[in-house]
Length: 188
Image (cartoon, rainbow, N blue to C red):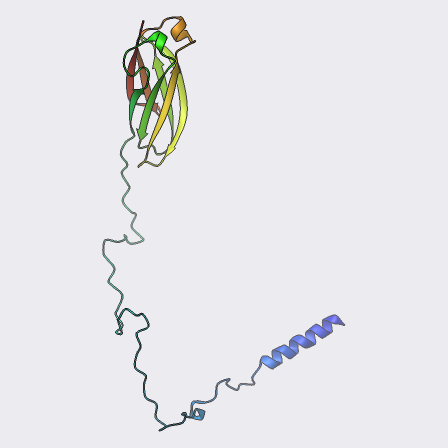
């Protein structure tokens, strides 16, 4: 019963929308001018933009240098190679007595990282033997720089207990390529 009622109502809606071929607008001859002389005069244009410009202007010509045509590939962007610098900061930046140093801090400033890279730091003890190696991941756009600080604990470690005095080397690598090196001296 419900389906029959829905079908009848749908048919009624469709028939009411049908105009039997009659235009919904009256024919142009049926339009009568309003009160007055019977002739229509055009209205003066109005400046709706409030900045002048009552005359239509074509859009500006596109510059030839804007974009290459879609069938050409844009030239590859040449990125500078990664670069870095290292500096000892705080205690250890100048020759310092071993007993006066808690830790030695070294800042590594890197630029030109292509999204993500692995930074390795090596602390080389006096005499040339590797003492410690650490790794970290750095993320940055190629045009930005990042500063990473590495600390070598001295007080209470084998450095102070074995009295490892002399000039230490610190080397920094980005994805296996050495970018920077610095040194500091611990005196007896």
